[in-house]
Length: 215
Image (cartoon, rainbow, N blue to C red; front, side):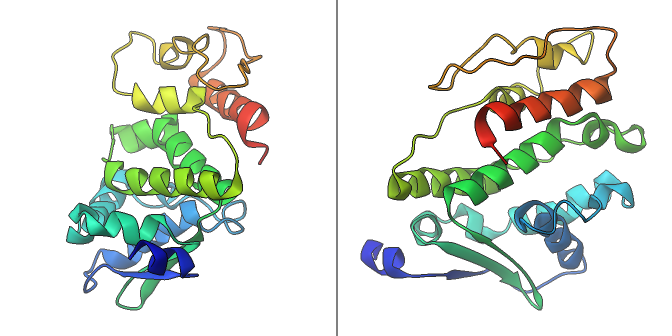
């Protein structure tokens, strides 16, 4: 089976029949995984309450496909993944650049002030089912391409996003000096409590792009 999937150009993942929430879920996933559309499309949560988006994403990410062990192999070893349910589908390439971009977009959005406080709500959808697949794809792609994958301050900010702080800006500042990547690159950005949370998030993600992604 390993040889079959390694030779495959695309694996088509059937997630089951669509529901009334599937279209919105696929549109949200497409915002993160369709590389060329991201910079021109508005985030879905600008026009839709995050609770509604959360429910639609759960409709997809909590489906049985994500809980079966053999699905890990079938989707990790290939060069392109297409997920579909009914007439709705999303696809992405399993190369290092694309996968790092997708993971960056999801994690940057989830820790953003806009995502976490939109409409006065605190929304923290469990992305682990999808992120574990994307991370496994990234490791396999790095092996094929002969590159080293390093963790970034964004990974730390995402992992520790539920820790408590009096000032929400501390969720960024507390991990500034923790360098986990192999190059030892550090953030130029320094703690500044006159900076708004929104501006801090913007500059933080710009720094991640500069030191590790080159997007």
